[in-house]
Image (cartoon, rainbow, N blue to C red; front, side, top):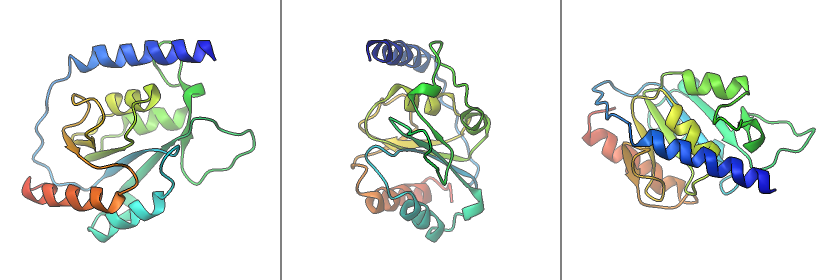
Length: 172
């Protein structure tokens, strides 16, 4: 328990230090590929959120999901790639291949769908090669290019606001 607390503390410290060196990259490309990082601790309606994206003309084949769970049971089966704090090393890297592939993939849009700061989620979002990152306003302001002021339970409000501003920014 105490070791997990220390690992989370050091990971957050590493992420916060790397966020100070972030350069804003402006991208004029339209959004075709979307990555979503979920925290399944508070939000279970992944399919409903994906359906909302599909209704807004994002192809389902271009949406990739990565799910975070606080605790993964031994024989639990998942529909999407899943990771937890156990997959995080002391040097703030991931050993799980699904997480490495997700982080390395270049998305046009990364949706950070979590509203509480957890070290593993912050690290995935920070290391992602996405050109435009969107998340909640309750998360560190340096992590996302665009923040929406709502909570995770209101996914329809989040998607409505997201696409309203993506149209204004000529991203879709």
